[in-house]
Amino acid sequence: MSFSLENLCFAYDGHRVIDDVTLAFDPGKSIGIIGPNGSGKSTLLDLMAGHLAPGSGTVLIGKNPLSMYTGKALALKIAMVPQMFTVNFAYTAREVVMMGRYPHIPRFSAPADQDLEKVEEVMEKTGICGFENRLVTEVSGGERQRIFFARALAQNAENLLLDEATSSLDINHAVSMMNIVAKEVRELGKTVVSVFQDINLAAMYCDELVFLKQGRALAKGPVDEVLTEATVREVFGVSCDVAYHPGAGAPQVVYRKETV
Amino acid sequence: MNRSSRNPSYRSFALMVAVPAVLLFLVIGVSAGMGYLEIPFFDVLRIILAEISGADEMISHLDPSWPVVVAEVRLPRILAAAVVGGGLAVAGTVFQGILQNPLADPYTLGVSAGAAFGAAVALIFNIGAFGVYGVPVFAFVFAVATLFVVIFLASTGRSPDRFSSNNLILSGIIVAAILSAGLSFIKYVADEQVSVIIFWLMGSFAAMTWTKVMLTAVFVGAGFSVCLFYSRDLNLMALGGKTAATSGVDTKKVTLVLLVTASMIAAACVSISGIIGFVGLLVPHMMRAFTGPDNRRLLPVSLFSGAVLLAGADTLTRAVLPGEIPIGVLTALIGGPFFCWIFRKRQMAGAGM
Image (tube, each protein chain N blue to C red):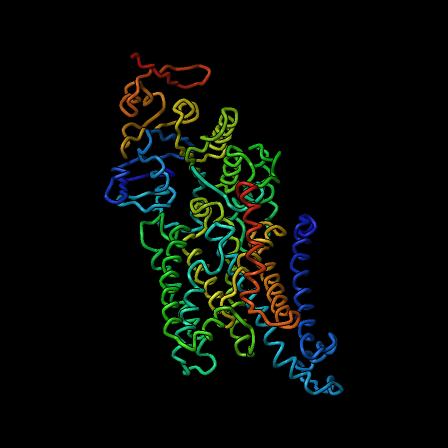
């Protein structure tokens, strides 16, 4: 068990955002979190990353509560690609990726060979090599997202949290990023928890899905079992057809046009 | 293969620190010879060496008034300007990093307003408890008190907003506004003493003592070390709080430690010199063009460059210009238009610098 949430609750000013969520995430699995806007997806991820303290309930990493980990110990467990970010200082793409090695490099030390190798490897994989010396303040939104994704990979933590990490990528880069994620899961046994807007992309790349609505986990389980017309209607209020698609290797959703 | 040969930027970093460091040495030496009494550069060096080593025979052939002028009058003033310039530049670098705004300055948290109010209180009540140190002590105490009030104000609210850039800036503005109203009131009731207050506010390094220089140097030196220690964490904070936190940075602690440290540096500087603007804003901003945004490089380079700039500017007003202009006025007169130019350039370029 790499991650588990037990009776997790969280409220902003008395308004419940996460309502009694209990989930378990196994190592070597990719889990997608899906839900309408304001359903608590990002809050759930922030609770799992320790950015927010739960109102009640616990987040466990392995057998220990998240609050037991501090600073660098936590950084070796969890890496995250946030949803929105602005960078006001002109770091190069390479410098940002190198910052992912922070928990591995002692203060005042220069990067060791293994750090430099990891950074090269990650930049190669994510296709940043072509613009490694460009400034994060000057690249496009999609390129910046890839740089932050690469930074999280360079951190080499056991668990990777992606908060709509493919949202500003074109389909080519979205697919190639998810392929990299799938490889990390398969080959290195990492646990990846990602928030998705695109249900079909989630179905293709995740082993399990969690459907959130108003802070509650309405459905959870393997993609084939939980991704149904009934679930999508209940969670999003949209009519659709769900059918296995051999090209995707997973069920895919086609939405029905409302006839007026 | 060692690192310096693998990474060429390590060599250029040494150069980036060495150039302003050598410049600082030259400015101090040249400036100490300038003024009403012209003293040759090498005689200045001889006097400094003799003062340090106690070897008086080195300077026995010189005019006996020269060592007094250099060591007791000019050097404290020049070094004070250098220490304050370096301190303000370091504080500015840290503020820009934490507030994630390349145009923030060391006075953002109301330190200058607090110091000004404290100094005015000391001046109007003619407080003699600390002798000649009454004004600096009051300025420092009020500046630090202001800092803690601002931090207290900014620390309310739920966790993601605590110590956010907006919260800190707004709290600073509110507290500074109240203090400046208080300052206006003191000026209003001050009668003849109002001119003393106004002169203090405009900044000056005249009548500097070694004690003041040393005390400030201790604050700036210790503060600089703390800032350098956390410089890597400060780099990561530029990627946003969440990314920094999941990378292992204790963002709350680093923010608080650096804000307090940088403000203490600024408070110590302001309390001996009066309000000197634009150095803390412009120096880190300009140096970033050479060093890049990496604070591990930017901090030492800013320290030396700020020292050169303010020591140079103070020499300009002391020994070059026909009449002495208050140093705070001079830096604002030069820095203000320069800032406008940078601001325009930044707006035209679009986003970040």
